[in-house]
Image 1 (cartoon, one colour):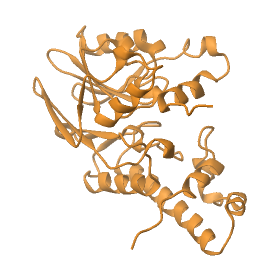
Image 2 (spheres, one colour; image 1 turned 120 degrees about the vertical axis):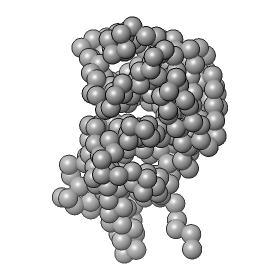
Image 3 (tube, helix red, strand yellow; image 1 turned 90 degrees about the vertical axis):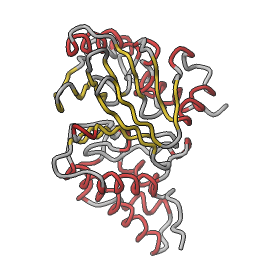
Image 4 (spheres, helix red, strand yellow; image 1 turned 120 degrees about the horizontal axis):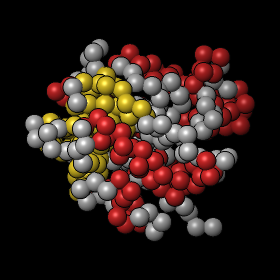
Length: 287
C-alpha cells in the first residue's frame, strides 16, 4: 500500500468517525475575545484566530471545508461584513488546512515545507495551496495590524510556525501545543520529540505571565499552562529514558505506563500507550 500523505491521513482519521453524514451538522463556531479586534475561534479541528483591521479579516488556520459557511458567517459578524483577505496556515494537517479553498481568501501564507508537502498530495485541492511562503520569519503589517510568523525547527512536523501578535501579547502555537493533552508528534512528516520540547521551551522564554497562549487544540491558556505542558513532556520522557536505562524492552515500558500523575493527559487520539511509543522514538542525545 502506498504511504498516505499527511493531509490525507489526518482527513481519513477524521472521516472515519461515527455518524459521518452529521459530523459537522451541530458544530458551532465560537469566538473568544483576546484583545482589541483579535479573537480565538473554536469549532471542529484546530483552534483558529481572527484579526480584524479596517479593510479585511486575517485568519489563522481553516479547519474543515464543511465548516466554511459557518466560519465565514462568524467572521462577518465579528468584522461588520469585511471579507477574508489573508489566511495563514500554521502547518499542513487537514484539520487546519482542509477549509483553505472553501473559505476563498485572497491569499494563503504558510511555511515553504507546507506548500511542498501539500503539493505532493494529489487529493489536496489546488485552490487551497499556499500562494505565499517563507523559510524563517515573515513580518506582516496589515493596515496597522502587525503579525509576526516564525518558523521553528522540526517539532510537530517540519513546517510548523508560531504566530506572534506582539502588540497584543498573544501567541498562536498551532499544534506545538495541545493544552492538557499528550501531543501528536508527526514523526513520519519531519516531527521531532526533542525538537518539540525545545521549541516549547523557546516560546516560554519569549512570553510573560500575561501572554495569552492559543493552543492548536484545547482551551485558551497562558504561560503557566504552557509550562505545565512542557513539564509533562520533559518528565514523561525522563520516565521512558529511565526505563530504557534499566534494560526494559519497549513492550515492557509500554506495559509499565507512566504512572497516575499523567493519566489525565490521555485522550482518544493520543492515548498513554501511543504517547509512550512516540517517546520511545525520541532522537538520541548527542554529546
